[in-house]
Image (tube, rainbow, N blue to C red; front, side, top):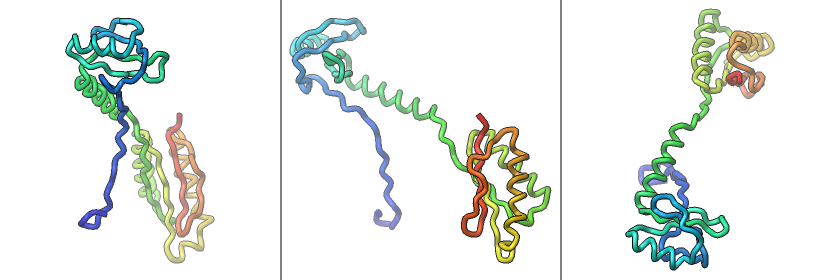
Length: 182
């Protein structure tokens, strides 16, 4: 908790730590030049000498290879390109959200159709839909008859969705999950 009482959120940033210049302790490395051409296998000191002559950095890009692969590049430019690639990959990710549609046992047909169209909109965007049928007071006596509402809801959306989790009674509500048809 911070000073105002709000929870602190820490984001995990996955960065690969590359060894550069004198940090590389391997005896032999495979070297790739600044233009992308193979310079062959040589000692780390020889590779470092070539990088110094070019005015660039020697960066170990593949530590698990035999022998490890090093490139002669501008390290700051390389890191900048890596972060741009990571951001672009993050943008392309499709995060599936769970949207909720709440119903009541005494819902009218027009209101039900409105909720169905709302759920259809969520499903076409690729999200999962949580359909909640909430019971209040004496409505709990008619739980069995109310299951028909959820069944008809799923049936009307069966052209674009499948029932991910069937209707299940939890507390004072009946919950069902719908997912997009694949």
